Length: 233
Image (cartoon, rainbow, N blue to C red):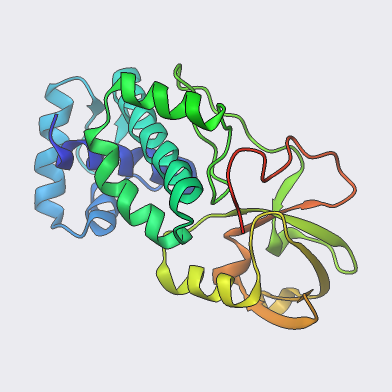
């Protein structure tokens, strides 16, 4: 299976889960930085292989086999991210870039060895869930986006859902890391901005950030210690 096919399948799955179920060929083309015509041709090709359902002008839907492939690629990706972070203390952006390459070169046997070595983590260093060998995904209890958090409450950061370098540079600069505590001091709903306090710094974040930073109430029981399976800091 070629890398381009795997990336196409993964993009459909992630758009379905993370991007408001926008799996139209044009949206997938934009995500993969290719032409609409190329995306349509690929969709037709993969439909003939039984990996997705294609209908003109309609969103793309993965078959059971296509979803299984997507989850396998995502599992490989997130296992590599966790391993690279643990062994080399690479940044959250760096581990993503390297995992984009390594995910396609990983056998089931190697993925199992990495998973065993890491102690079977449920989440990667970004806080993204790692599918298990059967494609099942564990989600964090009580997690919500920073945009949905309440004023005056203290939270713990549980997920940074992005692959953007500037976002991760900003997070590193101001201590926005998994496991760190923040206080929500103001919610400016009409302007879609959130003011937080962290490490004696006051930050005002717009919705581009607050919708991809996930937090959990500090008083709620956490699923696992966030640094149990890999070094975070």
